Structures are given as C-alpha cells and as structure tokens.
Image (cartoon, rainbow, N blue to C red; front, side, top):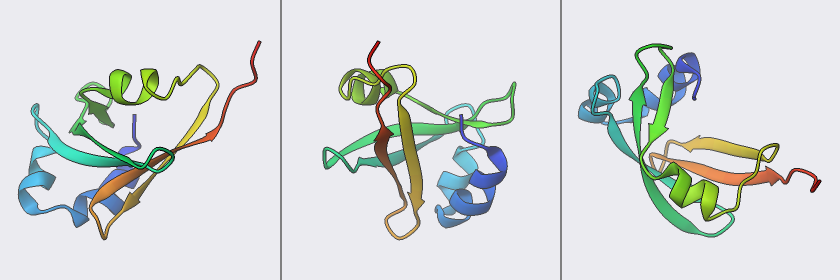
Length: 99
C-alpha cells in the first residue's frame, strides 16, 4: 500500500490527465517500475483501493518482484517516484537476517 496523501501530492500531479483520473478508478493506470538493482523495467497497475482509500500496485508484483528478487518477510525495500521519467524506482535496501 502506498500512502494516499503522498501519492496525491507527489505522483498524481505529474501524470498525464488520463492516467491521473484512471488511478482513481477500478481499472487503475499502468505505471513503470524500474528495478535499480537488476536494471530491469516492469509494469504494474496503480489504483485506489476503495476500502482503505490508499493506493496499491496490482498485477505481477509477486512474479516480477517477490519471487524474482527472492524477497522475504523482514526485507526492507524502497520506492521513489521519478517525475522526470514518470516511473517508480525500486530497490532492496536491506535483506532480513537468515534464521
């Protein structure tokens, strides 16, 4: 989940009008996500989750990020919005300690 207030302030205003409107609909809008660690581009759908009023990514999150990057509970990940390229940047900040 992405904080609605931050998304409305920093991301939505930089999208083209159609994308901005679509992010608030059931369909959502396609958003590029650049994996900084593996230098690979992926696309997920950004949409507002009606029950929480927050925004979420849907699509191939598990396939493109969790499984491919072998993310585990406790891993710290980072996202930041790049307004120049209208895309999110993703990276693994810290891996959880192996148990």
